Length: 216
Ligand code: IMP
Image (cartoon, rainbow, N blue to C red; front, side, top):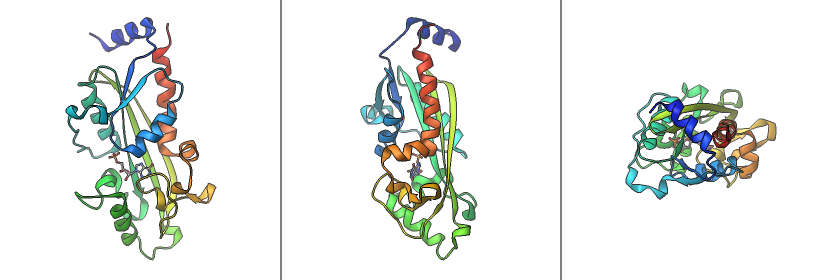
């Protein structure tokens, strides 16, 4: 059946409690994304509920490739809408690294702590003027193997020489956001979501998902 027909039937049926899969097991991401999609009548689930789906191998060269690939992969297994996002850190002086390798920057047994340690070592003694970095998020929405929408968000900042703060996940303790004079790990989830790459992309996703639930 054509995708436009599927959506037309779905919209006209005025569904109010359909399911939405967040294609991640990253607890930090799930926490942020759930807060970014308030007031939706979707039942929101994560991959933790579906271990049998297996794991999508992220082999793309861009965040968009990975995000689209992940969304498509899980939407072929899941009956509802799938929301996948790929995100990461790009550091200018490192030629954009860690980029799509952000999660596994320090190798196969990578942890947030080890990734930060490797990053700080590579950037040792660099002045503030050479520590610019950005977070990128590309979110893809898919249904039954078809990509419905792709949205992007980014956040500019710089990498501090030492971690600061206890909140968030990943590189948050070393990512300094100059307008607030804080690292992302010194912000609450709400404060981070208001300015973050994920917040920017996911607010657009939320607005789009609402249109799917509106009866035409
Ligand atoms: P993904 O699961 O392949 O998208 O991995 C994204 C990785 O990028 C995470 O494991 C973190 O290392 C990093 N990352 C992405 N978004 C954030 C963020 O909001 N804060 C800190 N680190 C992030």
